[in-house]
Amino acid sequence: MIPRQHNKAFSSLLGRSPLMEAVIRTAQIAAATDVHILIEGETGTGKELLAQEIQASSSRADEAFIIVNCAALPVELVESLLFGHEHGAFTGAVERKEGYVQKAHRGTLFLDEIGELPLAIQAKLLRFIEHGESQRLGSAEVEHVDVRIIAATNRNLMRMVDSGEFRKDLFYRLNIVPMQLPPLRQRKRDIPELAEHFLRLAAERNQSEPSKLMHNALEILKKYHWPGNVRELRNVCEHVSAVLPGQLIGPEQLPLDLTAHPAKPGSGSGFELPQEGLNMESLEIDLIQQALEYANGNKSEAARLLGLTRDAFLYRLKKHNL
Ligand SMILES: Nc1ncnc2c1ncn2[C@@H]1O[C@H](COP(=O)(O)OP(=O)(O)O)[C@@H](O)[C@H]1O
Ligand SMILES: [Mg+2]
Image (cartoon, rainbow, N blue to C red; front, side, top):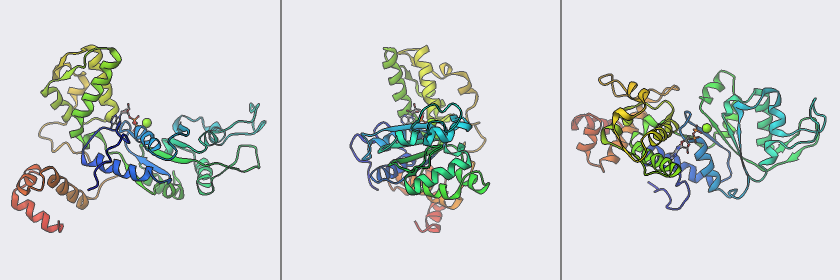
């Protein structure tokens, strides 16, 4: 396994769980190239932070990083906001204007929530990606713009392709190096480090000592299913820092809705099937490999981590040729 490079690159992205390490390794490789990138992941999983880190460790680091939330663009203005317009292109277009694409020239354009782009604009974006050519609204002139696109989505774009809501050719053009940020509930071992980080940041901002989580409070955080992912964890930490600065935080001091929705004891593993489904065979292989990794290759320990007898574990190793 290639270790994460020990430089400042990607250092703001905390978390050492195997799933995170894998994403960051892919991102490091992609950052060194100029390919367009698609980052998939639920809301709050760190897509924007990852995009910033990719930009910062790319050859475009000193150029513009333009953030556009596609869901927030008014439908009638999407095209002119993205690609610019000529004087008089539409009522109210009193001057010639650059779009985000021109503003990002030589740099990176972060297209957040790209699944929300109207189909007609997707077609124009594809033309831009394929030829680097952009046309302002109301102009016949073609401009050459050099932009790397990092797109992000919390929707399942593949499924949107199937239902005709997202262009297949655009999807494949963006999805050259697939990157999926795992939900926080699939990397719970990162929670202590993240919580400590957010408590420290909040304390710095409030000029107080950082609050500390008691062991059993941390256990509750680890059991919770985190629908809002890292952003929600950050909010919880900011809340306790504001209310109980510098204090020791017990389970009862955590915001109430947090203790109300832990994964129910006795109702299975707490694992949630991703919306888009999964491949059970490869999941089993992943779990076996991760268990072996955590257990430093000790098979009895790996079996224990998976709740299997040693024999049952050895049987599965053999089954998958591991
Ligand atoms: N791995 C991480 N390490 C540290 N902070 C993180 C990490 N992932 C997300 N964050 C923080 O959580 C918040 C939400 O992240 P963001 O990138 O906006 O998520 P998304 O774009 O996927 O909704 C931000 O404050 C971000 O800095
Ligand atoms: Mg975001």
